[in-house]
Length: 355
Image (cartoon, rainbow, N blue to C red; front, side, top):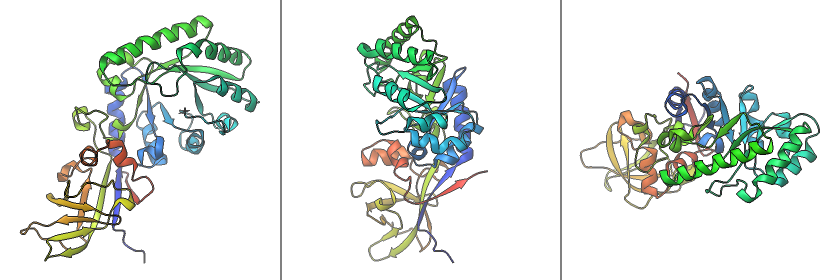
């Protein structure tokens, strides 16, 4: 007989599917929708999330690295898979064999691709830096990058499927300036002779606040998982539902000290908090958190509230019970919601809700 776990996370695939449908209708509109499944799908499980995203209407998937794209290809059918964090030690031929699109921002990447890919034609997305300085080609290097890409395209080594960039999302005005820089770079690339099928620059934030940035494809990340990328609005405000929730069992009750222990802590991926910060729910009743330790959390028990060994505690992610959100936990720990869910990636059991 197996040992009952003291903690776990649940991942609702139906909720994720609803979020994808919502993103497609409200953020992408007539554009294609690319869903980020980086970092094990922000800790939710890349295989299950990738399959659900495509079944729910996503057109493409984004990963960080080639290895992740190769690993996901059997679960992605013939959908576009884009990897853009590339290292000199990466195997570009593996990307070609698995039909993983590459985000290209430097001449060295084109040179490496030409050396390593002897058969097949790799789909590439050329990236221009428009102000964020996140691994795009600098404007002064853009002409040379486009010129070499055109030469390799004519040689049958690659095809330039897309031109793209990242926005900083620091302000609407800065995004507008970056979008103008991007259009200027597109004009320059086309003047050189490139004929990309897709242009993409917007993620969730810009697609929400700057609809003209949607172009041909919108990339959606953490919002599709029911966690807001904004400081001034929640995922619920945007129409998204939390996909992951965190749970634990009561492992000890000390009536004299009016406290209980639950079997989850920062060794399981739970982000630590300052003492006497935050709360969890028992049923629908809030219990204050005294501390987050390595393998357990300490809860304060009010005098009129009974808790027993083995009782179920929800830490965050279930609005119906009144539980905190991942964003709440992020604010308590001084970080962002992405970190709260991603930290649970490999630490504890993931229970998938499929219907």
